[in-house]
View 1: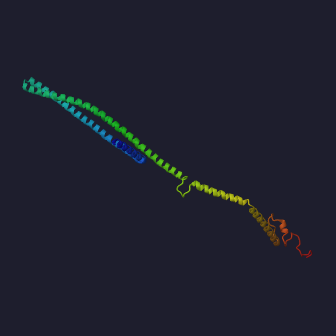
View 2: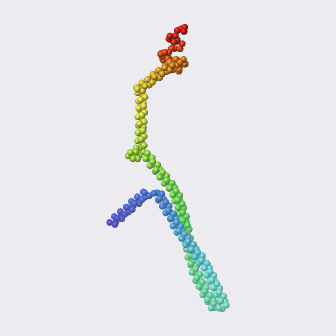
View 3: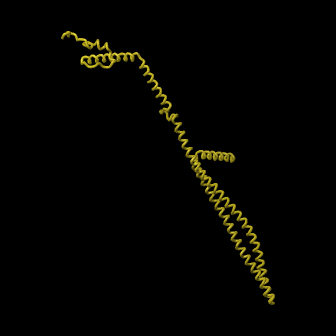
Length: 271
């Protein structure tokens, strides 16, 4: 039973992780990654500072031990000189005391020499560790700078991707049905083109119909009669003839008119 529950919990955890990964905002995730890199750089600098501080402390201890070593060595030499001088003067008691003091300084000198050697080894190791820590901090700092520059590039690409997605959505909406009562652009275009084609077809039928030709002939006849009447009026008024396209037979046949130079009816030759 426990095994089944553990498998179920692993499945739920994986599913929730996948769901979160799909719905997560890449911009937020990018900022999280940069914040983690900056925090890692901060922790690394703190560790490197501790290593360098240990190297500095070891160096101070070494310098102090070497100074004390030099001092103890000088004291041991001085004690031996004083013991030798007491021996020469015959003061055996002081010579013994100075010799014992010189031996104490010698023992202290041996201990200091061992301490100095140990401190030298520690200082060498701490110096190497400090150099490695400095190099690690410098390397990680360069990597952080690259990540910061990469963040700007990724943010720009993310903005371009969002703009492209919006453009794709807008372009696809032009050919997709928005709702049940809203036609597509293609449907509206087909409807307008069909109506325009039908109107053009009706116009062509109207232009070639018999009624259209009859109206054209009737209109031409009316225009000819009007020109004849104008020619008659001009003749009565003694005005010059109109345009050359006035029918001559229409002027001659008009009632109450006569050709130019012809006597009017009822007028004698000798009148």
